[in-house]
Structures are given as structure tokens and as C-alpha cells.
Length: 162
Image (cartoon, rainbow, N blue to C red; front, side, top):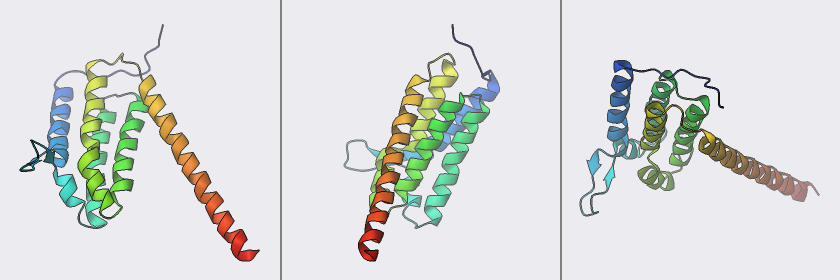
């Protein structure tokens, strides 16, 4: 038997918050149709991201608003962390010139976060195991990348000094 560690909010407040997030996610990720692509859409996030630094920061701020709304709805902490991870990936990769802009058009962190929000607001008893798995995999990848960078720096320093 599992124990509930949160009390999800109910009622009009929830529907207003979700409607607000749906509007923002649509605006940021899917509001602009791309002619000749068979119905593909981009959002303002992809356009804002073209402005170096300021665009990425503005986009990240709006993504954090989506996460904040989710946390206020009583989502499980691991789901909020997963939403933060989606936003962090969008920000970190999106900050890379050209490649990041193309990534922004595909990744759509706000739509992903909205899906997570819907899943756990509509069925609060839903298992959070998949979220833990994603966080563990990404955490492991970050640790491997960090280890590689440290090894690379040490190797270069030893080569230069020795």
C-alpha cells in the first residue's frame, strides 16, 4: 500500500492554472504554423531564442513560470524536478548558437511539462517511477560528462606540464 505524501489541489483554481499553462505552452511551442511542412508548428520560444543571451534568458523565465504553476498545483516533487530538468535542458542546449535554435524547435519543453502536469493533476495516484528513472539516467549522463571533462583537463595539464 502506498502512502500519499501530497494533497493535490482541486476545483476552479486548478482549471484556471492549467488553462493558463496551456496558453503559455501553446504560445511558446506551437503558435506559428510553418508553411510547406505538413502542419508542423513552431513557437515564439524558437524566435526569441534567436536573440543571443537575452532571448534564452527570457525563454527560460517563461519556462520556469510553467514549472512554478505546476509546483503550486501540488504535483509530486519528483515531477517538478523532472519539469525543471526539461526546462534546464531546453535552456542549456538552446543557448548553443544555431544547434540550440534547431533543438528548441524540436524539444518543446513547455509542451512536455504541460503533459506531465496533466498526467499528475488528472490522476494524482499515478506512479512516479518513470520520472525517477529519467532523472537517474540524466544524472548519470551528467556525471559521466563531468568525469570526461575532468579527465580531459587533467590530461591536457599533465601533457603541458610533463
